[in-house]
Amino acid sequence: MSRIRIFDTTLRDGEQSPGVNLNKMEKLEIAKQLEKLGVDVMEAGFPASSEGDFQAVKLIADTIKDVSVTALARTRKEDIDRAWEALKNTPTPRIHIFLATSPIHMEYKLKMTPEQVIQQSVDMVKYAKERFKEVEWSAEDATRSDWEFMAKIIEQVIDVGATVINLPDTVGYTTPDEYGRMFKYMKENVPNINKADLSCHCHNDLGLAAANTMAAIENGATQVEGTINGIGERAGNVALEEVAVALHIRSDRYSYETGLKLNEIKRTSDLIAKLSGMYVQANKAIIGRNAYAHEAGIHQDGVLKNAETYEIITPELVGVSSNTLFMGKHSGKHAFKDKIKEFGVEMTDDEIKATFKRFKELTDHKREVTDDDIYTLIMETKTEHSAVDKYTLDNFQVNYGTANITTATVSLKTPEGSTIQTAATGNGSVEALYKTIQELIDAELKLLDYQLNSVGGGKDALAESHVQLVVNGETVNGRGTAQDVIEASANAYINAVNRYLIKTQAVKEAEIVNG
Image (tube, rainbow, N blue to C red):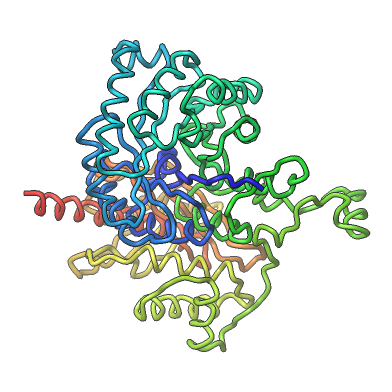
């Protein structure tokens, strides 16, 4: 079977999802899991966009060894130089540069003629090739571009060193038939096309990303670009797990395979959902919680007699297993360390100690502790690590009744080490709680979004809250878990403020280093 390379852009295009704001440690944890998943190429970010993105890309490039790490760059020398500085220590550095080719982009955004677009692309691919062995060139908005013009530019960038040609459906505009014919046209009309791989990159604005991607594969694409869970700008990118599983299940039709370890899909999906705050919809293909649930009586009867009657994908294929009790309040630290090794997560002794403490606190309230519970606690500890002093929740109390005014009292420990306390009222428990915290914190705060979910099922499920705040004019995300939904909400709010403090401190340190 022919191999389709998987180009994961969760850390770049996926992070551009509205409301998603990952710090570099969170990006590193995602990168490590993507490495376990078995992606071929990992787009770690856009180094020229900010100092924070540069540092995150560099950290990933310095850490990840078994996956080719790449970064995005515009057709500018300064972008290419910045990408090289971030990627030069990775074993197989590569670069992804792009320039729009559609008439509307060239006229209104770039204000360049077609001839100028060709020359700029050729010059910058040639410049990038001086540093990078692998150079990918993308025709932004390819699906609204003139095919003959694109064939001309593709031939010239391959001549100067492009090794991958990407034809993205940037605005999710095309259909499977159109997209497939575009790839076939390039295969037949670009004389040197055999010297480069053809890549597809589909957005899901019309809900056709997966179908368009399969059409591209049928017509010569050898690389697929997308994200886990399909996150991304607007309606998102093609979900890589959908493409990989489709190729596997329909191997009777498609003589292609990927290098993904399919049983790592659920763990990867869960991690990205937790850190991004973008929960997977229940009826999401492949990985939604309803994907293997059968409600109709006829379906249930058929599955009991033979699962293949209504189940074309086994849960085990993608790493979905039942949430069974594996540890409890009497479990010791040795067993806990063994469980961490089973997850394949690297933790320092201090991180293990902090997570074990949280685990013990959870077992005081939750009788049945699941793998998902433990993994949530592990990821919280892994991504909260920072030397910056932060706010911590000392204690709180909320008085609520349908006939009474809701009042919250909160005590916080400040970054300076003092304890502050106040009370406030609100129209409900969460509003009263957040108004009280807001009065205690010396910053301008505005709540944009609030979400509450459970980790697993049952009345004693661990609560997980996500918030989005504007802190002193900057949008940040926060998340928190606890046995109690109100405590989880408080933890998420305070976590958002602390993330702002951490980011602010990192920017100050970078400014000092850069003079």
